[in-house]
Amino acid sequence: MKETDDRSRRRFLKTGSILGLAAAFSPRTIAEAFTNSDSKTNQMENIMTQTSAAQTGEQATAIRPFHWNFSDAEVTDLRRRVNGTKWPEREQVADASQGVQLATMQKLARYWGTDYDWRKGEAKLKAVPHFVTEIDGLDIHFIHVRSKHENALPMIVTHGWPGSIIEQMKIIEPLTNPTAHGGTAADAFHLVIPSLPGYGFSGKPAKPGWNPVSIAKAWATLMQRLSYTKYVAQGGDWGNAVSEVMALQQPPGLLGIHTNMAATVPPDVSKALAMGGPPPAGLSPDEEHAWDQLVDFYKNGLGYALEMNNRPQTLYGIVDSPVGLAAWMIDHDIRSYQMIARAFDGKPEGLTRDDVLDNVTLYWLTNTAISSAQLYWDTRHNLPPGGFFDVRGIKIPVAVSAFAEEIYQAPKSWAEKAYVKLIFFNKHDKGTHFAAWEQPELFVTDLRASFKSLRSV
Image 1 (cartoon, rainbow, N blue to C red):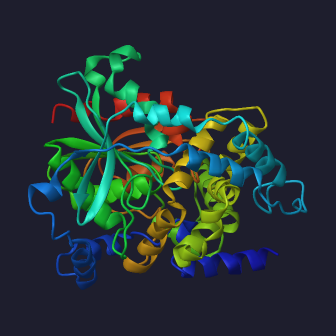
Image 2 (cartoon, rainbow, N blue to C red):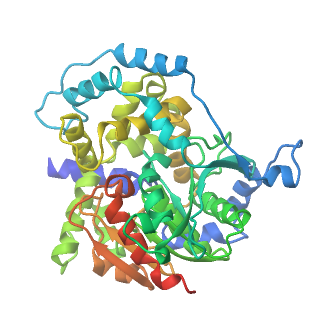
Image 3 (cartoon, rainbow, N blue to C red):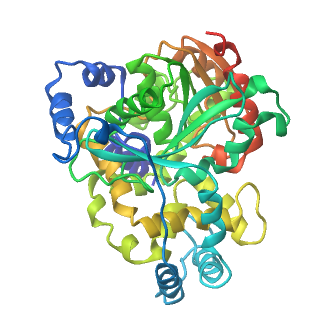
């Protein structure tokens, strides 16, 4: 069985889906992707720079207030579909090794189809200012909350998959209004929280070309349009990829980045993982722990990413079945799944049932199950291959929060080698993949500390 697992892992890696998230960015990839003479990059840029003939100049670049409303009929239809779910048989095993367990999904559906109230979560979303602006032919939605404190530091925060702007809702008030949340005026941030292309309220790309390289450029354009001449960036999951690519592109004004899913895996470790062999000799206990987490993810956690890397359009079922969508989304990684399952068992820690369903319901109502998945395909097919967690050679200041139950908890020793200007590192003994959403107090404390040294730059 071990030999079969190793062969399977090597085969997965050869598809370019290392770590199951997408082929992304080795140092060579970054150099190629950011060189102006790179024909493939230029081709992608040409595709994306089409703008409506009816819009010119100020119209195309305007920052416009954004409002939305989902009808009662749409919400009623969702509940009807949940309650009409056709269920499979129970899994054959007593654990989650075959996937999201039937008992968990039936508890989720029972609550979703009866007591859950989307309007409560929607009201929280509507309580903050929303805007949209067209960048490279696509409407980009974002939350923009300015602090009342004069010297607040602007920060752009990027979510990932299967997340959304809902991931960041709990950190907005503590970061923009720190004096009411245990901090001082010197801790204040202005926050810009965009929806990735194809996610939430942002436009859905009609052609390939939107991947972390183009998104990073778009985020720099957004910050420029908002007249922020100095700012920082933060992200986890795809948000980390976008933030790290921004750091490599070094747009004017970007002072540094913070990540809660760092890319620190050394080349020898990455190679050993790809070959399915033993770990390199001499790993410290923290490094061995990271190795074990990565090996487990290779063996057991790649399914969702492989499908979205290769065949996202095939996922019609999660567009038509809300319970199918929910199961697909909560099966991101085993430790996050276990935390979510406990919430539906009546033992919430970090995320509540409403937290989880607010996020899934936003995907459902915006019909973004497949448009969000296309980010995986686009990255897999339109950037040179590389590892999502491979070191990228970032030169500007980087801060790292390493949460215990992330896909892997980045060791400080790896972070110090990966980031030549590591300005902050904090290892947490709890917390999963959705740090800002699940552990907002720890997350906010880290962000305040991370960027103190950059505020006077």
